[in-house]
Amino acid sequence: MRDSRPCWQKILAQGFSTAAELLNFLQLPASFANNIAEKQFKTRVPRGFAALIEPGNRYDPLLLQVLAVDDELLVRDDFINDPLQETAANPLKGLIHKYPGRVLLTLTGACAINCRYCFRRHFPYADNNPGRQGWQPVIDYISNDVSIKEVILSGGDPLLANDSVLAPLFSRLAEIPHLQTLRIHTRIPVVLPERVDQGLLALLAESPLHKVVVLHSNHPNELDERVAEACKALQAAGCHLLNQSVLLAGVNDDPDVLAALSERLFACGVLPYYLHVLDKVQGAAHFDIPLARALSLFGQLQSRLPGYLVPRLAREEPGKKSKTLLIR
Ligand code: SF4
Image 1: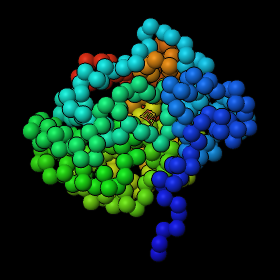
Image 2 (image 1 turned 135 degrees about the horizontal axis):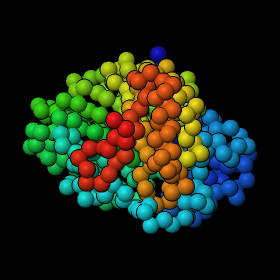
Image 3 (image 1 turned 30 degrees about the vertical axis):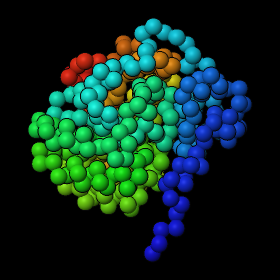
């Protein structure tokens, strides 16, 4: 039977692309958004995600993640454009090689949602995309380095690439004998679950590589039944599902919220993996939480959840060969 649902590209195009439209939909005044902040990093919110925001509540934890606000214009010397100094680990267009044994491919600069705290909000994607035909040097780089066991597709959001881009890439990666694992870092199953369609699932199921999908969810309210179904479908296609969250002031800096997030993730078949302290990117200082408070929240989580539901509290530090765990 033909699938009569609208395709994900159409649903994506119907999303909110201005803060004014989004606020109008939520019955909130347009003055809650800041135009200058929005010009610096544009608004992008799928309608399905917006539907999970409580109308009339300017402090809704999902809205806080996507609304361009005055606080983004606060300048703090310790919040910079490239907090992880990724441009220094970028030997080829589209490839970042920071950690031994694995490389990260920035498949597209675009995302289905623009998260205001994103550490790549200033990353020069336009200069760093090799284009549809330009992946051969990247494939050669991976083929020529037998220490690379894992390729991480990142972005932007790699699942925003069409299947016609993913299919040849997946098959060329599968031909590299020393490559074992394909990892996909994506927020799409959470914010645009319609993208997890039959075409994508078939591509994943066909790949002989180990497949790990690392989702990005910060609040249990993001994980409705549509998301749960997408997660189950990814599992059925042979993917291991993990989640990483960012600890964000006003959004999830609460032990009840964090515990509920872990429990809801588990119900969707996803294991909590990392809880990141915020990367100090310019424009996101208002989401920052003092480290002592992050440690205290983590301790409270440990005391109320079984170990397998407690994500690792971690921070990325430029130049280090791995993330820094804040509690061992
Ligand atoms: S989906 Fe990920 S990469 Fe895209 S804006 Fe959000 S945090 Fe950044």
